[in-house]
Image 1 (cartoon, helix red, strand yellow):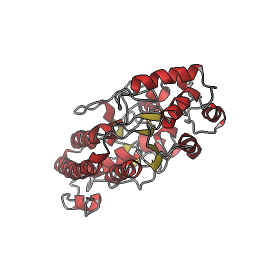
Image 2 (image 1 turned 90 degrees about the vertical axis):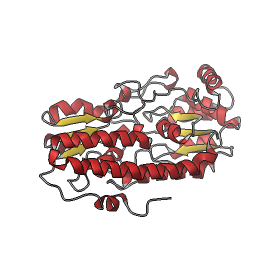
Image 3 (image 1 turned 45 degrees about the vertical axis):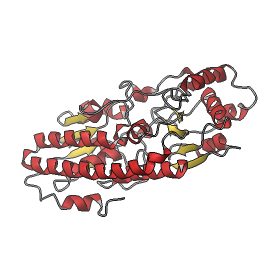
Image 4 (image 1 turned 90 degrees about the horizontal axis):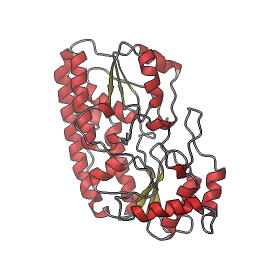
Length: 351
């Protein structure tokens, strides 16, 4: 069941007016901004760097962002594995601000990046699909995969704003986005990770604004309890879907997969949403044509014609997922709405 009150309204029941001047806090992405807004409720509103609808994969700093960073008391960001464009600017633009990279915080389990089209832990197909991918790389012009190869050669797909072409997919390398390490950076998709982050956020805010320490901690506790109720409801709804084979648009969902027992079979793109190459597309088409895929999730960053190509002449269903909250209104209500909408996408596609 969804909460009967919006998150912001629920927090109003436990918050009180700020006791002192509140800190200026800047946050990089919409999901993390939502977590910070929930913890700060009643003691200021954090500033969001990325405008609505802009993916962290395609972002670049604007002049207004530089101004906000230079005036910030605290900068809360995901970390260089997700937003390297911010990592390069923090020291210069916010030298006096406290900085908190959530991927470096304690109290949660990190999951490694996955590179192959098929995941070795999903449905026992990883090794075979990995072999298929290498075969496809050697014979990508063979019958049945010509359209996939042609798409990879000619389709216009989003690239990042750093100006560099992504490396060939069959080299199985990660792009510059993941220079921060081998950890999958999309950790907010597990509500238990979000709980650990909000606990850390409350303490970090209490350190720079001790007058509101109790408020921050109470807000975090209320948000964590609300998310636990939402997670319990989602777990019940998704339990019957566990074990069904499906593809994610890019490898950004494994924290959600792990939390709710829905291991994906594979991903169309790598974790940075870079365009898949011919070998990867050929391996995916082979999996789909074999009838082993019943659902292909898509997202705002995935070209519709790519999904159409993969689904052509198959019974695979599709549904829109939005792990970055690109289609949602920024603010404290965004995070629970993101998790709820993601659960609904899985229900629609796998149900």
